[in-house]
Image (cartoon, rainbow, N blue to C red; front, top):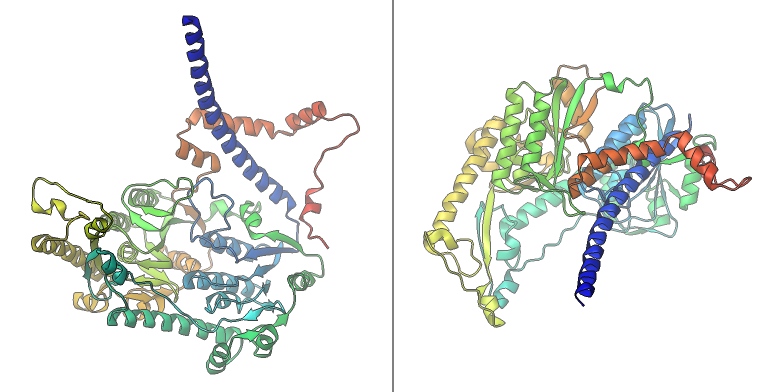
Length: 602
């Protein structure tokens, strides 16, 4: 019997150890397979690129991040906005690329992303290359998805689709009444009246300041879009406004109103793109083109270096990992270290800091602000490129830069402070729950408790802390933007501005996207306006194996071994030997010719 229990226990332990080892092996295998697949895809894509007649394919129907995700599981996402801009910039001077075929977004796009894409397509076509755009309708009522593509080139609309892009609208859900019904109380300090993010918890509808700011944003964004669309469609601003606001339209009505150029199915639009290259077009996804290295002899490695440091999401302390696909955040440690590394690199001529963030921790923002200041003191110009939004803490870290570049539709500003809590004790008591706090020490120990409302002294203490942060914020803006403090306090007060409004107020220097920021970096670095430069990421984008190593804590030796095995298996001699052992005589399991695979069917 004793032997039986030893055997049983040994079997259970063996199974558990085997399961653990199997899990580790699967993680290693998945990492190796993903890396191998991506490396092989890059190799095959490079082989597949023909010598001429390439038509890039860009699908705007899927949402895109502003910057590449840090998660190793995000390899299947569409190209991030900054990668798309860089790719189209490279394609402008690639003689193999003749044009681009675009699938338009049908429903909605963020204003900042729409303008960034619009600018990239405009630069691409002004280099002498063509663009054909096909839309299966502009079904959303907002104009921004239409604004992104209306001037790119030939604009096709599916005959059975509709055109409903007639303006801009926003909806805000207020929870103040709900909290009141359930016995919860939202307690917030807002500096000042336009810092209205907490209004959704404290109010049951728009305050006068909240309504004014929101309508101002919508109006300015709409006017920006209409101004560009009038140029795109070769119409007067008045005629274009009348045409847009006269919708919605059927496809034929939109064509009669000159809002689109042609009616037809996707197949028809692709044939129109093919005919631009005398029927010899080779369609290549923009993601596949982006993975291929620059052509030999392009001189990319010898160009002056502009550092690109980027971050998206809320600003937090530390360096949170990208994980299994959670929300992107800007870790203050990571961004500050990247700025420091770029500032120390003797080959870097200037730093472009790309920000796409609604703000976050004041402490974390201050850490990044300090890194920007050190870079400038080290003699490296810092140029901020704002994405869709760079507000509150996002503006805090931009304020000390040598130059700030934002799209007209970027949301920025929000120079203010808010903080607080939601007291839920009353709501819990209604369902029989009791949240009962205990504390020792000072009275402020329970200031953040959800069980008790602020006492007068707690509220006063929190107010003092908030005012200190607000004073620090406005002081940094005043010094960074060389504006009198009285002027900063006048235009701050928590108000969100568009990039166009911010430029008029002195909060932004130039209107434009990432490429305009790179041009500004050339200028401040003392380079010629047309001198080619090389953008180098700080930190470098990790390979899939590196990302898996960071995520799962794989050893460097294990990663190196996987890399060596993968490289060995890719050798032609090894592959030939394996195929000879596995294939019966006379049977071929080879893939079709790579160039044939790149040809568009039909």
